[in-house]
Amino acid sequence: SQTIHQWPATLVQPVGSPLSLECTVEGTSNPNLYWYRQAAGRGLQLLFYSVGIGQISSEVPQNLSASRPQDRQFILSSKKLLLSDSGFYLCAWSTLGQVETQYFGPGTRLLVL
Amino acid sequence: AQSVTQPDIHITVSEGASLELRCNYSYGATPYLFWYVQSPGQGLQLLLKYFSGDTLVQGIKGFEAEFKRSQSSFNLRKPSVHWSDAAEYFCAVGPFSGGYNKLIFGAGTRLAVHP
Image 1 (cartoon, chains in turn yellow, purple):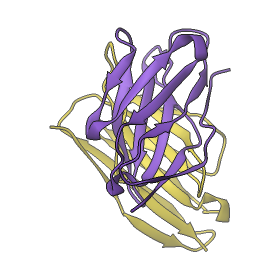
Image 2: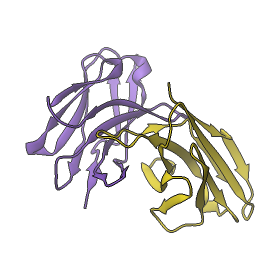
Image 3: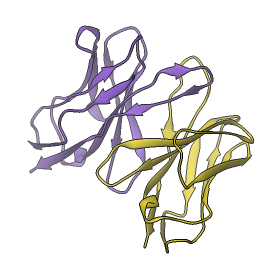
């Protein structure tokens, strides 16, 4: 069966520091991968998606970037965090097919102080 | 533009009571529709989904949802709520777009269950 991991689970970082959040998927090949941000009391905003290694598409301009160095690894990064980067970050995967459903990881809670 | 509206931000029900969470969408074609549940501090778990066929779909944990094209709605229901159902519920529309499935989420409905 497929599983998705995210780490760390919780992170507290000072403003201006770098960021690296990691997401890995097991049990599937060539998944589509997604990064979402969930601000407190709000819905989910799609940040990035990837349909293959090295292929990243950004949905909104922001202080963050994403990379996909391996088929089942998706990394969210920032060179300098802003206060507004605080939130709950969720990674999701799906398999391209006739009916495509996204499955979510446990999330990383980021607090920028 | 595609959008999803969940009119109720908070809902409180008594344990054992029935539940209906509303979801309305705006989309130009037949949508793919999803309901997810999120417990505090956790990721999202898929409850059910609709793509085509029977407009009443069954999901996990005793939930069901009905697609009504004429009303652009996909309301989630459960006949008898359990205390463990307290969580946040998200409706999503998925216009499949050439290689990936961009989900558009509603703002969510937070469900509280009174004993």
